[in-house]
Every structure is written in C-alpha cells, then in structure tokens.
Amino acid sequence: MTIPATERIARLNDRCRQGLDAHARIMVTRNCLARLSGEGEGIAEVLAQAELLAAVRRYAFKPGDGPERDFGAFDLQGQRVLFKIDLYEDPNVKSADGPIAITRVITIMLPSDY
Image (cartoon, one colour):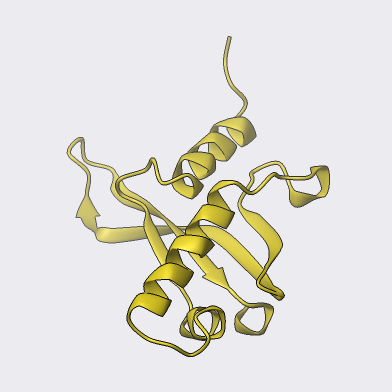
C-alpha cells in the first residue's frame, strides 16, 4: 500500500516538530523569545525555549490546520504563538546519494513576526 504524498509530508513534518529529525533546524524569533522570557536573559531564555518547544511538540492539529501539518497557532503565557515548517534546499550541499540536501526548518514566532 502506498502512502499519499500529502501524508508522507505530514509525517516528515511531525518528525521535525517532535524533535526526531536530526537534520531539522529550529528557529525562534528574537521578539518571541524576549516576550516569553520577560525580556530576561540566561536562564529565563532557556526556560522560555523549553516551554515553547514543549508546546509545539504537544500541539494537537485541528482539521482546518491543513493536511501537511506544517503550521499551527496556540496561546502560551497570554501570547499568541505561531509555528511554521518550511523546506530549505541548499544546492551547494548534496546528500550521500547525490540529490540536493533538503532541511526542514521550523520557525516559532509571534504573529507580528510573520
């Protein structure tokens, strides 16, 4: 049984979101991190990052979120937070078998950062 392309993409996005893709990159906008850490630095930023990642990983998709599971929105500490998964293709980096390397990048941000 073949898996439809949309479902394959959704599963790869889930792996990225759940921290299971070793090649994925996680980006948190400065504005988002500052707002959720109370403009603090050091341990406050680390705690805010941990809370953000935990919220993204437990995010429960709703039917209107789209079939590829590449975007979500939730509230955290009274702030609306968005995440978006995109693909980054680097033509200068090839995987072991030759095709261009594709990396999933998840960006966590506030609506004003979008």
